[in-house]
Length: 73
Image 1: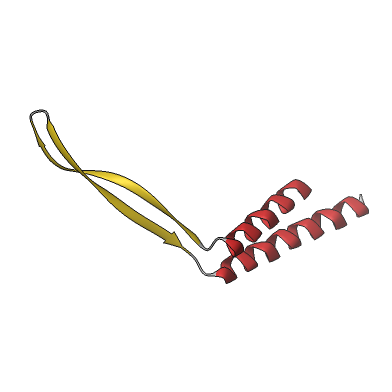
Image 2: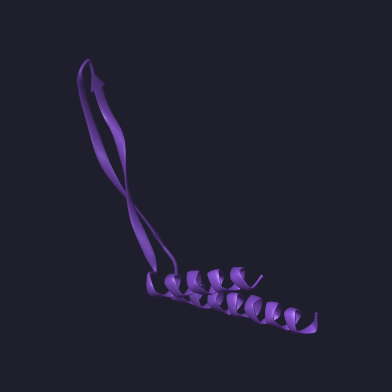
């Protein structure tokens, strides 16, 4: 549980620092015999910085819950 909390916390930090990414896919436009024409399409995935902050809060809650659980047992 402690490891999961740390991982969620780090993912939230990265989501706050990097608010999106872009990737490229190739789309076949035309294919006639040996002639192939493709087009590169850019796709952007983005999110608001508060999504990363909320993820860090969830990671902190998981981390604190795991700490309290280990102290009681």
